[in-house]
Image (cartoon, rainbow, N blue to C red; front, side, top):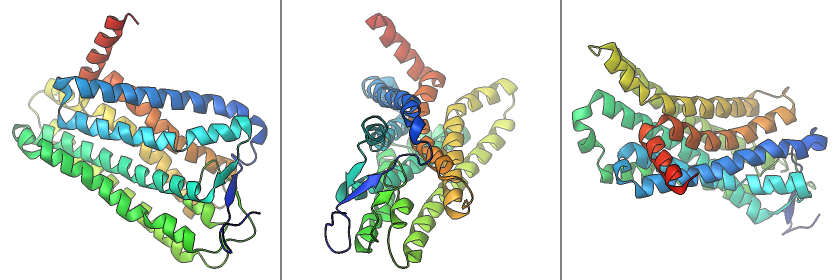
Length: 312
């Protein structure tokens, strides 16, 4: 094994999905399709919101932030993953591995934060509509967006530095499709309890805080909706939230499964854990533009006009 110094490997070898090597070529087909939809779908969402002035509202600004996060998150993993599946390009240098690790964890935290920001926007829009524009001004939206990014950077920036301080055993093979923190930590010698505890604690605290606040926001929304004088008004109010609730359920269900398998799932096969971990990074970025594009009336109408104008 080539060494960068006495303690760190020069390259890691990504195995892909252990136990499913013979069918990885077939698995790559839906993964590639999901990435294509995620890549072009999020770009379309960004362009529509950028050039359609009627969409320059807090909710769509947060959708744009989410789309940019999804683009980076999916692009940081899928191209390398396809290289493993199709061309057996398994090597990844140490610095590139640390960079990928940081991007994956930090941008996942950003996605969770933007979901919370969107829930807060829906809460203000439904529960306090007269003050919506005053509470969520452009400056406030920008401040919220920067806060979400800053929080993710601060909490997950230590990850690469933690790994660089550790001593690696004579093994540079990562049984995963990407450089996931826990998978890399398992290659180190000595006691890594503190490193694992830090990562799991930070991830669980951010996820639990965002999810709890999101649930609280929707509890208040439902209370307001059910107190509206007419059923039609309540249905109209809830229709603006269905897209958001759908993507939140997909994101947190896969995220929770991934977290729990790290903590308690010692009897779960690695192929199941790694497959769900890939779904966790690929499905939400794919679904977000589809759900928001189809279920959000303003985006859908603009997309239809663009397609009709281009003759598609």
